[in-house]
Length: 359
Image (cartoon, rainbow, N blue to C red; front, side, top):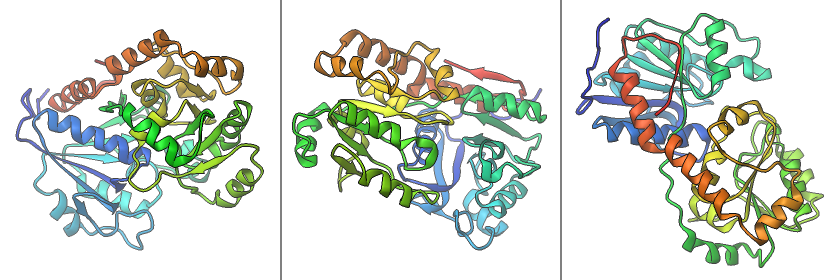
């Protein structure tokens, strides 16, 4: 086996590429995690996307682009890099022309294809065949074990690498933001997700109602869900807050809330599972498959139906539970753990094996 990079990655150039970057969506957030982890390894990193706030904008990579990015444009953005990390562009065919163009450009070049979503996981893409692409020079990374096994069944070897968080809690932001939101002394139930069908907004809203609290949904309505969301919120039996106020970030949102809810029917990972632990907040979690995989590391969560237990927790927080969850998050899902996994992946790019990298 040939070691493509060696142990020392300092000075090597990496690009992180996706449809859109720099926003609050899960792919953007975790792409930023990888960029930070790669920089901790001494690599020079640039972000490349068709939308958002990347370092380099490439026409044709965006979700609504009318045509594929040209080889010349891709080469201008990626030509001097040692490795390219492709986040979902060659995973979920939301812009198939962009995926095909990126795959064609990267043939024979060191690349990591990180799969947040795969076609068979979404009804609208389930009939899409022959995807994701593969090449001997590439390594495939999944964010959960079921996706890794699904790729293996299709003849593609992958490695599971969990997200790595560098969250910095800001408890001092709590009181000011609660005053801004006008929640008073009522429990603030935070659902830090987009508004789409599989996020099960109704369950999050029902929990806030049962706690006599205020429901706060921070993400936008997407995938044609706006009308259904409007009807749902119009019938709410508790106060509702929408989106993040100007100048407010998610660290402040976690500080302001009393309970986090993630009642989804499906998640590729579920960032609030770890974020809530790092920000020392209880979380009510739906019964989606990957939740059990993440819980196995030692997290302790509630369910959306645990109304009495959550009410008691809000009144008298269990510090030991918060301590334990924070310790699990920092040990297994911290930014340093991610950096070590990426060092092993990239330094040994010639090694092809089916495994889960944990640090």
